[in-house]
Amino acid sequence: MPVSYHAPRMSSLRRYALFQLPGIACVGLLLFVLWEWQGVPGWAAAAALAAWVAKDAALYPLLRRAYEPGPHGAAALTGRAGVVRRRLAPRGVVAIGPEVWRAEAADAAAIEAGAAVTVVGARGLTLFVVAVPANGDGWDG
Image (cartoon, rainbow, N blue to C red; front, side, top):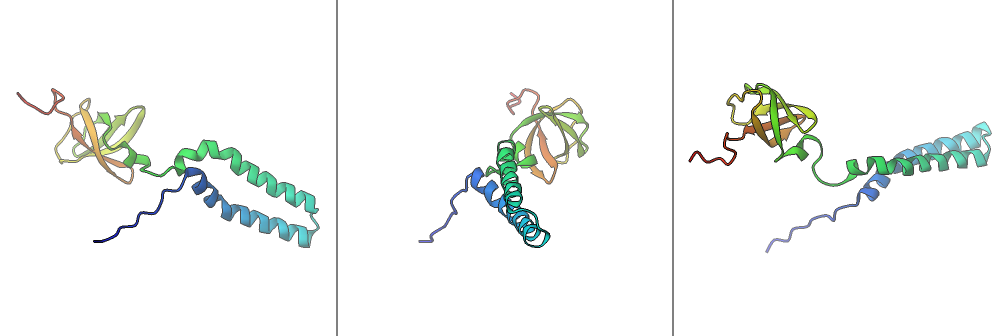
């Protein structure tokens, strides 16, 4: 029986911290060079490094969602409903909530402005949508 391995999901805090390490290392190295060769006081270099780390800590709450695992951007909109703003023939513009996105009709049929659509996929910043049937349930009868 084949065994599959799935890496454990990393918390957003751990991902954020790991992405900040190279910047902290570079700033630390620069401050060390300034301390060693330019005569910057050691306390000033240490305070600057502490301020850099404090900056990263203060920004984490604002950036936390970007580091969470899962789909982001256009891919996260799959399954959401929207309204066509500019006719899709097959490309146009749709509104998903307050955001306006470039879109393409997934079935290559034209969809008129004002029609309700559902997002079925995305590539880059382009959404692929299908028209929602007029009665909303997909049944004609």
